[in-house]
Image (cartoon, rainbow, N blue to C red):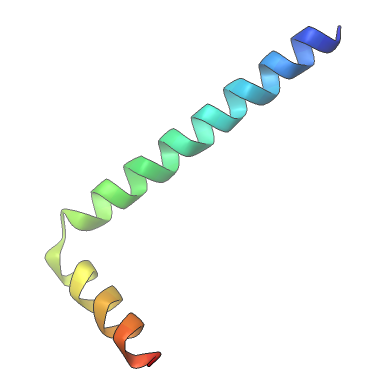
Length: 45
């Protein structure tokens, strides 16, 4: 039973990482998003 749970955790972790990557790639398809993020980062300093 422990191996099954570890497999589920691993699959969920990979799925979460994949979704995060897709969100980042989708955000960079809109150049305005990159500019806004860069400005927000620059304003921190």
